[in-house]
Length: 501
Image (tube, rainbow, N blue to C red; front, side, top):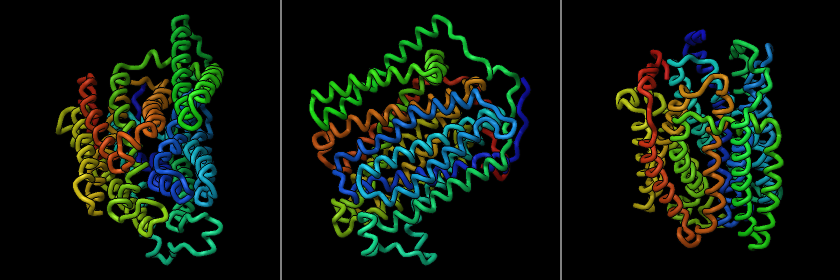
């Protein structure tokens, strides 16, 4: 197998530049969707269920996009780039429409479209690193992507503070109250800018990045499954259908009672099983039984990380508004100020993420173990969540989120780096898609279960939800030591070109 040539730092930068726009979109979503739902009248305890779009679309779309792009090639358009582009179009449309939502239902539907678009674009960017970069440059590729995550989300969260400096008013006029159902300009304009950012950055990556053609025609061949693989596919099909049925039944039970829960569970099982009969899912389900050991061992790390992290996006802004600005409800006088402070906290989170991403390969090399590095940074993030309990001062939230941002820099790079060298290039797309499913499943479980105990175990208190997020990061950190690292992984790759990231 011919080794891929080294790319310059700026070639790696251009390859990842579209990720900046995608992450700008995710940053706006993460910081603003809970306030948008509250502006439109949603109850605080219902917030997790309204975030369902993210994990479900990610769970279904990312493996599908990975499997389909693994089997694609066009001399003109490449392998991954068409999926990136069409996902960007869908995401941009949702960004324009979101701040014009007139009901919780409309906002929830648009969140499905937004997540479908952004997830369709994101998975190919992860696969780019394995497709285009050689083994020694992959840490640089993931570090640059981690930088783009932090920088894009920082810009998104600072927009309510940046736009007034260039003369754009953030005030909500009386006319806007009638048409936007109370959603202020501090939400509206950043979403419009986000739509343009997604399209422009993705187009730049498509223009400047050349994908390598496949080395042979194997990608065209229809996969012939063995009897053992067909048994495995049946097993996973039944397990996934049952999982969807249980979680869907829980949502229906919460909304309408036990009988409706059972009826919905039955219907979801049948619909899921029928959907999983589609040929593309055979390409996804078969590799599940052949997952590399490292991927299996990373499951618990990803599970605890991503059961806890959604609580941050769901409740950080609401906690800051309630305790630092005495604004427990969207009608409270300080709620918009608290929402903007939450944006600033997420900006600090993103700043520390992209700063630490510059040094992450060197830190990992100095520690000598990627799993220990990741465990350390997850523990630091947990301390950031616990810090919010120590005071009602608004700066405590800023300090806490700066620590969580350090963990985020590791979350965005270390697990992918541990996995990348264990995955064959022929299945890079589908395995990266499945690995991102490891992110989606625990979020789905979070959104089905948190409403069951939010008012009791968490005391109907958004700050307690942040404490639970911290506990989850500690468990994720400990789970890193279930991973058996390959010695040659540590020898690969931690060098970063001079002047690069």
